[in-house]
Image (cartoon, rainbow, N blue to C red; front, side):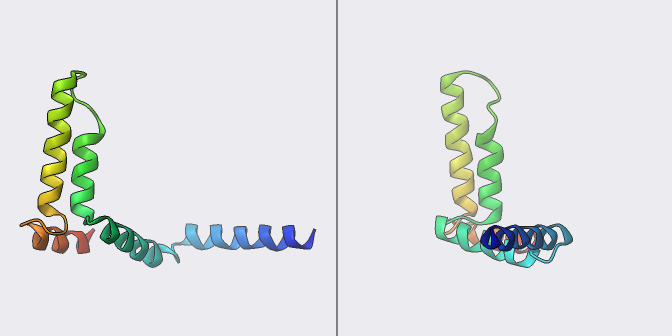
Length: 94
């Protein structure tokens, strides 16, 4: 019973810290670490998700083209792409 009370208290404290914004710097740091491990920046990941996320036309060929365009454009601003510097600078401001 004591373990449950400690667990519940910890959850409430974490929730309040999250709502009040104390965890924002840590959340941004974790996003950077995870995106870096994936070889992405915030800009390249955002481009990929926005371009490949919602299909404009429900045609299989057009969907493939849309996915390839999104991946290629995201790769341009990702790690190792020729726009990596621009992607890194823009990602710092997000």
